[in-house]
Image 1 (tube, rainbow, N blue to C red):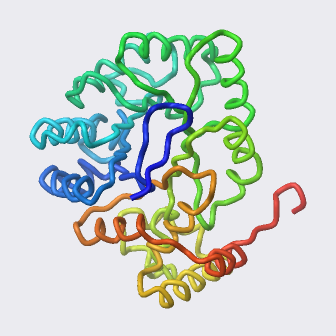
Image 2 (cartoon, rainbow, N blue to C red):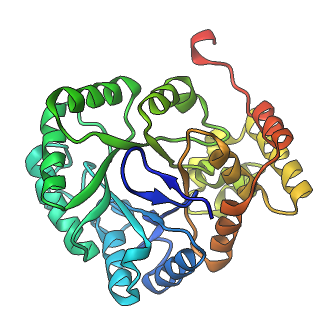
Length: 324
């Protein structure tokens, strides 16, 4: 399976990442262990989590996903077969502190993540969300020190606007600090404009790895949501409402057309479309069952024809915000 570099780092990953935000929520620990084993044994290697996952679930305070991964790493002995990506900066449970990208918060948080993950070094440590109240020099200085200490191998950004990402890269250059090697933006067949309009140009110019989240539009692009009556099919159903419109259904129809031609399912086609974007390193997708994971593995191996990509591009075409 083709591997792709994350920016200018030494990290190489398969063209699909496992989103571990489901661990400790819709996937319990035994299920998570089975999913991770299957994922790695299929030749995939990038597992993406965050210190805050899944703080939104009743009874969770954040860190449960990292802890499950840590116990799996210890039990499986597969540390050298995975690229571990986690994040810092979002608000955890009030008893654990307030989220930010201050130096002291990062230094404290990385120790907790390393302990939960039961590893000595995080492969890709990502700023989960921009912190406009903390100078970029302070944040990147903290990341630089962590890299010098061997606690992180590379750093990335998530949910950054183009102006702030560009500013961060300039701070790294001008101050001799570690730079963000990757960006984690929202990107899928429906949500195209935010990435394509500005971020993509910067990522290409700066050779940043791009690891996309909500690659299946919260599950909408699986094709199982065809009306408001279908929203109860998933714990994330409420997040799908915005896609239930003429353009959304046009995209799903195109996905079904391509999937029928290829003998696969719409979710696999949707992920293959993201992975086919030249600037994308790997889309992130989650699974809560072995059957769903096998679909993801198949998607990583799927190659779309130029005509299939064109059909999907046309079905998902959008009017740029500046001309609306």
